[in-house]
Each structure stands twice: as C-alpha cells, then as structure tokens.
Image (cartoon, rainbow, N blue to C red; front, side):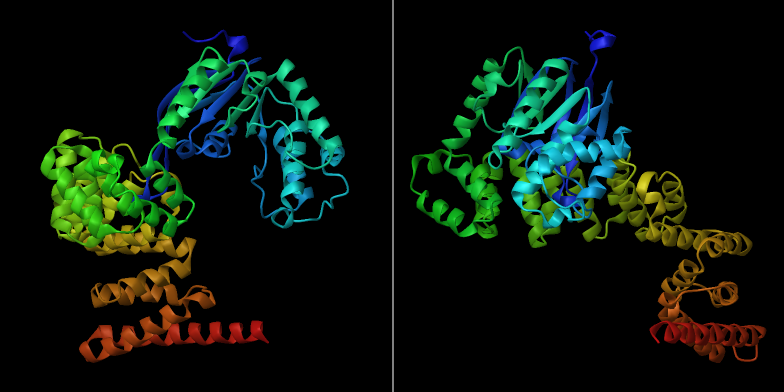
Length: 514
C-alpha cells in the first residue's frame, strides 16, 4: 500500500546496483523495494560488505542505480559524516558555493552558517589538504546548514567524535531539531545508542534492505547476523583480505587447517578463502572436490569458471559457466564468463549470442562487447545494427566511432562510405585522420586515397602528426604498386598535401614551445 501523498518521501523501486566493471562486477543491492516517509527517523544497520556509503550516495542522488528507480518527493541533504565530502578537487569556498547552487540558497548566508562549524579555516584551502577533524567539521557544517526534507548521515554519531565542544554541541542541537521537524536516515555498522536516534530500524545485508517496525527488532536481527560472521574463521580471513593484510590471512588459514570448522566447511567456501589469499592451486583443488560432490552446484561451477578463466583454461571455464547458465539462465556473471571464454576459443558467433542476451538488459558495456564480437565474426551488418542501439556515455566513445566506420566501409558502396567519412571530418579532422591510420592496411587503395584527400585539406592538431606521417609513408609505398595508373598521380598529390599539413603542424608546435 502506497503512503499518502503528503508523507511520500524517498521510494526505492526495484533498486539493483552493481559495483566494478567486467569480471570484477559484483551486485551490491538486489531488487530492493522500500519507502522512507517524511517526518520519520530511520537508522539502517549495514553489515561490512554492504557498502553503506554507496547506499547514501544513491539516496542523495550523487550516483545513479544500475537498475530500478529512486523517487524523491522532497529535498535531500548532502551526506553528513566523517569523510562524506564528494568535492575533493575543490577548495572549501568552492564546495560551499556548489552546495548553495544545488539547493538554491544564498551563498553568503551559507558561508556564514558553515563558518560556525569550521572556525578560522581558510575558504581557499583545498579539501584534499584538510585534516580529518577539519574535513569532518566541514561535512557536518554543510549538511546541517541547508534545509531539507531528508538528512542523510554516514555513521552512528550526529556530531564529530572529537574536537571543539562548541561544534559538537551545535551538531547535536542541529540533529535534534531536524529529527523533530523533518526526517533523518542514518546508515551505520554500530548499534551504540541507536534506540535514541531513530524510530524505525532496518538491516542492509547480502544485497537486501529490510525495514522493521522498531529499532529494537532491527538491532536483534543485525546482532544475529554479525554474531554468525564473527564466529567464522573464514569470515575473519575475508575481513583481513579486504584490509590488505594478506600475510595475517594466510597465517590464520594455515593455523585453522586442523580445526573442526575447517573440516566441516563446504569445499566452495574453502576454495574462495584460498583464492582470496592468492593460493589459486589449493583453491582449484577444493573447487574440483566441490564439483565432484555436486556437478550441478551453481557456487561450485561458478568458482571453477572463475579459477579456470584466471589460469587460462578456457575450455574448462566455458563448460563450468555453461553449467551455471543451465540452472540460472539470467546469471550475469556466469554469462559474462561464458562469453569471454568463448571469444578466447574463437567461437565468436556463439559468444555474440551470449553477449546479445546480456545486452537485452544492459545497453552499455554488454552491447559494446557484442559489437566487438560481431566484428570478430565478420558480421558487420549485425554490428551496425547493434551500434545503432548504443545509448548513454558509450554513444560518445571514440572507439565506437572507429568501429562504426569500419563496418560502413566493409558493407556499403563507395559513395556511402565517403558521405559517412565527410560527417566525421566535419566534427573532428583529427578523428578522421586516426580512422585512416587504424584501417590503413585493410582498406582498398582507391578508398584510402579518397579519404586521405579529404583530411589533407582540413585543420588538425599536433596529436595527429604520427598518424599523418604513417599515412604519407603508405601513400608513397602505394605508388610503386599502382605505377602507371591514374591512382599513382592522385596518391602523389595527396601525399604532398599531407606533407604540407605536417610541416605546418610542426612549425606551429615549435612556435608554442618557443
């Protein structure tokens, strides 16, 4: 049941978010549906692997979810708390101005309010040079100095943990005032004093967000989850690996070999632990044991696929990933592993089919991988169709521009090729020069000469000098192959024009250096 319109605040609708790219991509949040109402105070307890700061950035609009929507029926404050500032390349004054602009408040008044929290700190200081105490004070000052319907806090404390007692009291008073009149959302990994900071509790664990009717119920569930984690030797190993303490993790694994927990742990869990500390050989042995015990096990086959992919055993990686896909047809990691290793085995058309499945829900990186795979399979018509579907940031990728033109000149008539190339020249002659350079050994001689003629009459930057030099040398070597033909004279003329362009660019570069 949806809340009344006057209480609607922040709604998460089928929120899914991934972290990392390609094979390092992991699912942080999986299909979360939740509603934060106005005039309520929330505290969410996050387990260590839940990345609470990422959730706060999503709630505040600093980043976008991979899938799903976040509906905001009101304003949301900057993230408040230690190390919560996103403006690392700016000065303190610039950060204040950016916040003032975002919230449409008077910058002078905001500076005066923030000054109460940061004291005599210079507004010309870059944030990257601030001490931890100054950075914390600025974060609390910016957050509490703007008026919003929701206040986001990173950590259990509504004030800095140390520093000026005046600043600490000012933060506590500001938090209480906002908690009484608006809404607060605290995301933390600590339950200390939590009952006094919010009315509604929640737990963020294993990609899911669960809201409870009371803070006490949320604390009980969070304590149960963390107790299980703290009792596990293997969980401690994972925690040490995350901190970069690899030697300590290896020693703990070695000391636990004869323990009951070690003997009774699933082989997949042990394989992941050894893989985390860099012992791929031992991990592979446990993964094989897990596969032998249950050949259809998704965790075992997925782990085997990852290990085989890492060691270059592409047949094993592909077959293990395929076993996962047979059980779960929408398992994205397994599909990526399958497509990647099929490409390594030169099964480009089959790999393209897998990338096409992934591209149905991802018009970015997966669609681009599909295009590259189609081109390797010489399916240039299919690649052109896929390129037309590209959206978002990938539409402006120069490599995508180069791939599109290669597909065009391999599939279209000469007049269509020239028309396409003229559009590129009109936007960037440097990109046009680089396209000729990248395809110089593949294009027919007459096409290459016509394209080179078009770039020889335009402007270029010094970045294109190397490409121009390569094109000139290719034109000169071409004359020996087409001696006596009309193309020889055209190649000579275009080479001379490019030589003049090269000399002009070198002269301009020398002038800049002087």
